[in-house]
Image (cartoon, rainbow, N blue to C red; front, side, top):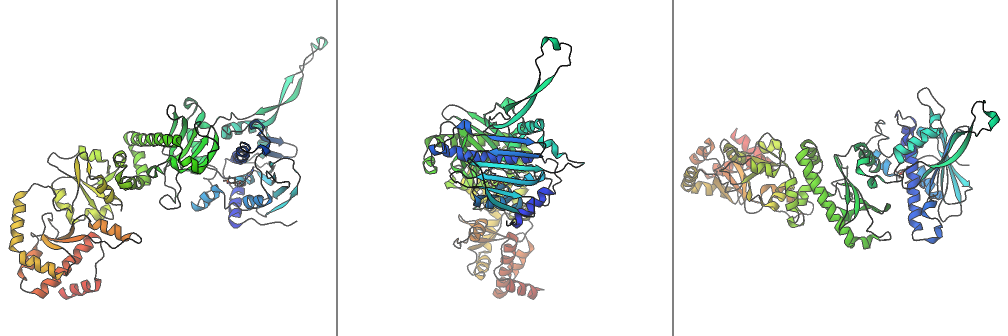
Length: 630
Ligand code: ADP
């Protein structure tokens, strides 16, 4: 008989399990029962449409059999079973297992403390067993197979005898050590309490023969004898079988919800918030909704699939029903269970199901209101949420031509020039000064960069707060909103900043007219790179800055041009020169020297580009010009 080796990554996980210093070895039982329940789910689902299965709902069960003499624990199910190939693929390599994928991609191997807080799968059996035997017969197959392994050395698969479809897992317990009494896992009370603790909501009965004792009936002449006891065996169902979401909220503790989450959704981070919804009326459903505390590694990629688990009256009909969540709430995890949906509904039919749409709408409302509650009552958590998923909400504002902006705008947070902490738009507007007409914003790669932008000087000097937009999508979202509470958004680079200092404006206008020739000269020297050169109203200490006129701003130009296969788009650039800066006097003085003026124009333009965080077009020329000056 050939001993096969485990695939490399399976071997690693296996080693990790065997040498685990994790104290909760008891979770192996939860894992094996969950697998058994999943397998029964599959066959039960088949049985609803296929009479050949020949089993009724009450026939399905998971059995635990403990034998202290042989030191074995057997977990038996009459589920879908595994073919030889499936035994090989599922247990020989676990690359397909959801839990392993999660673990390797999150590099948890180094930290075995964390394992056990979420699904660790079949291999957890090796935390308590020296030998694991799996005897399985797939539904529809006439052959059964036996998979055996004593750990990292490998496994064997041979033909076996088994009557019905299903799987039997036999664990030969490790010898007791000083630290761990594996014998305990064969004790009926321990097993009962473990099932209650971890697997109570499993939808199929977990059954066990439990030995009780009772006093023996005494005959009259035995009066004075010591009482005698006899043992008898009873089959008990150890779990209540009520799914968590169907239980009364009053029966459940925060821990129950959190535990359910970490186990069911492979996330070892506790959720930031959960909601248990019991909805009646136009849509009847129960739902458990969770806001994770971290974005999954693939969240902002094409691979990410949003969706909630969908149950029809307790039976899982779809693992990820994407129609239940709008894209902007795609981060929400959880499940929905409704009696209103037909069990045999296909994916295609589901998309058009009216009832599903009603449920989705109601769920969206719940999510919105939960997020708002979190923003109001638990700001710290909300900001955590925002750091993880804010980008998605901002995309939501911008997407579908702004169709969703009204319901999303109050979820937005931005850092601002004041204290650099997050504010909502409502908080910004409430804090606006009386004479302030606009909601000001500035864009840049980072807060530090924006802080240095010359364009922000004047607005700040007026004592007005500025929203700092650092994500690519920000300005697009702001442009989609256009206004918030009747207040228009205004970029600090815009022409009309709405600042009341007409006297100064007039003065600069006059200066511009006086120097019209010079400005034209500068603009021509830049050879079409800017649409004009003007004297700046907004600069105080900096010599120059770059702004734009028209719809496309410099920031938008950057974003649009960085998109794959985006067309080249350029903003109409305006070079602003500070008339109060001494450089302006120098320019005036050299107005007769066209050649020199041209060089200065290029230098100033390049400087402005650098300040904007944009690449200069000809770095060699720039460097040469500077050397020349030096
Ligand atoms: P996961 O449950 O995370 O997918 P496991 O390592 O627990 O990973 O199990 C691997 C796979 O083996 C399962 O996805 C399932 O296909 C199969 N499997 C495990 N236990 C059983 C069982 N009792 N009956 C049928 N298939 C099973």
